[in-house]
Image (cartoon, rainbow over all chains, first blue to last red; front, top):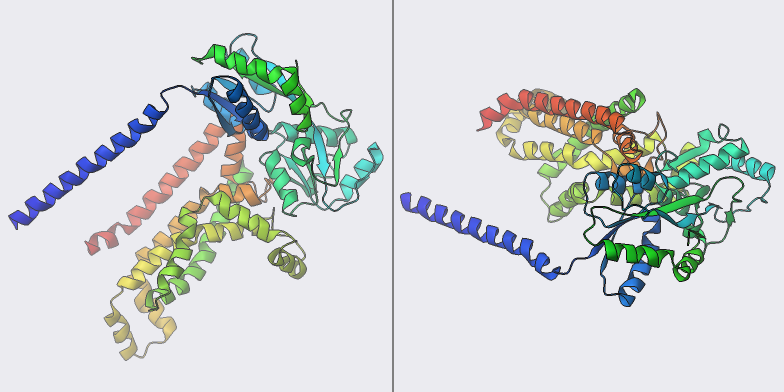
Length: 264
Length: 222
């Protein structure tokens, strides 16, 4: 009996030692591989694919490695305020970068608009109305289900409610409106056929048919701003990426991707 | 305070746990008696919601609910309404999402049920219904409480599935976890704290009651 207990105890001890060794190895191995620090960029999901593409180009031209972390602007904001180790933040709006500036989290003078988001109506396999206030209002009211992004949290949702308010139909369409958490989800609701029409970012649907770009008289284009964070240990590199994003060449690529250009 | 969201969440959790109980009991009973090489596969399918990211489940449901899909189309033609963005839609999501929490405790209890009790019931010529109420249920009561309690509590915390198929409609699909997420995203931290605190206290009290009620049966097993 005693012998069995001793053997079991020995085995348990070996197991614990083995597990600990594995954990220590797993913990230290990536650190060794990442000896050279990467520039960490928090990016609003709606710009993340474009940011990855631009980051690749930038990496080829410079000896700086970037890692793009996509999340909603609100989540990234909360993380930054709580001390997340990002060097840059590319928000989907201007409000959160302004807030970060007021809270003293950014390098002074680094806040700039890198792109302006355009709002579009997407209604697959439908006859779209002419860009005329009455025709647009009537058409939107007639739709069985209208998808928008969350007006309180997503800039494209705010812009969509602005359009509805300008058209004077925000109350009429309320029963038919469904809200996606972000502009991607509004896109998804339309894409899966659960909503007939949606307010989405033009950059998401520029290759699709049945898309109507909304005139900017109905809303103000969504200013997507970036900031370099004060906590960064790589301010020079971060500022270099900022300059790169605002350069005329990159700004042109951004317009081709379905945005309007930012400050340059 | 978002009373509408709180009320809706409680309603969703109640519907989910009651329907699941009615559905999971025969399923778990059948599964516990079923001797077949395919049994592990059925068990795996039931356990899937435990490991799948809720957003995956939500996305599949969103696709299935679409009028372009046979399921969504059939539903639309028989009921005249669509499932996405409706209470019925998120209820279906919750039923799938919480299914393992209802089935597994019952399944375990039924499997460990001594067959001699059933044989005795048979000698008394008890009907199936009476066998269940007089013999099986009293012996497995704690498993039933666990099943109801866990599926209720699990539905309270449901987020990803509702986020994907709900459409955030107040009073219809905007549950507490979604309202909470909205508050955090819109930097409305004080409202978020309030709601999170309510959810935390409620879940804690519920689980504590569950463990308290189960204490006797649990200790009699060991």
